[in-house]
Image 1 (cartoon, helix red, strand yellow):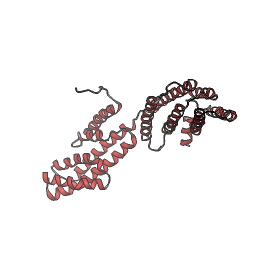
Image 2 (image 1 turned 30 degrees about the horizontal axis):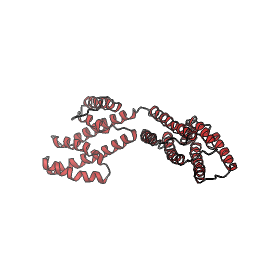
Image 3 (image 1 turned 45 degrees about the vertical axis):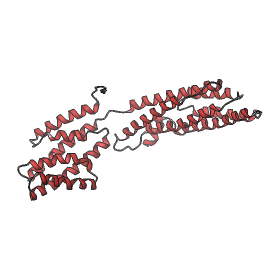
Image 4 (image 1 turned 180 degrees about the vertical axis):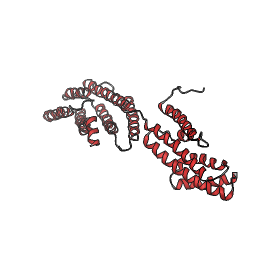
Length: 330
């Protein structure tokens, strides 16, 4: 059964519709021939980001000027025939690829058809086509300058990731108190991974909406969380290896609870590290395990503390999102 997608009018759709209308109105007001073609130029140059838009505009402008010159010369030499039209396209496409402006091939073909249908190929035709390009590509650029801020969506992703990581540490806390229960957070880890991946893609897109900035504090934040996720997965495996009730487990449970309550905190990571070092000192004072299972449990706990220390150090080195943004901007 055919499944229809939800009907919605997005921001890019609105920009495309407005841009097309403006292109036709301006080109017609200037008295240009083939004024409707300016709308095609607008459609082809409306992109998701400002940087991609500028790249598309430059590529299309260069390729159109190339085809305008090439087409004018060849049509005048060989005549305006369908076979000649195909020959020009055959010669032009490899040329566009060579100059890395192949993105403008479709737009160039529109301009080429104008030359093909022209009654006379002269300077007026050349000026008309250049003005069409300026109007269409110029309006597309103006439309792409208007880009909604992505900070709100990125903040939502940030809060979602922090809620999910909080759930992980609360589960770790509960397991340390009742280690004989099942601990399987793999579905939650997959959700975190999916959230982080989507957030990084959006953050990267935000970078492409700025001409002078090639970094994004949010991207580094989600990259940091992605690294921490790997540590959380390793911590789960170590917790699953606990076979006996070690005396230090209660304090580790309390530490996990502290971390779960401060996942989004930018100021208390050092305090968590201090608590971890205190646990290590107490661990050194405990009697050695007497059974094989107790020895394996103690070894898992020691490694667990190492992984948790790395987790906290990563957050400590990153600092706050605002601080990281200020450092990158300076």
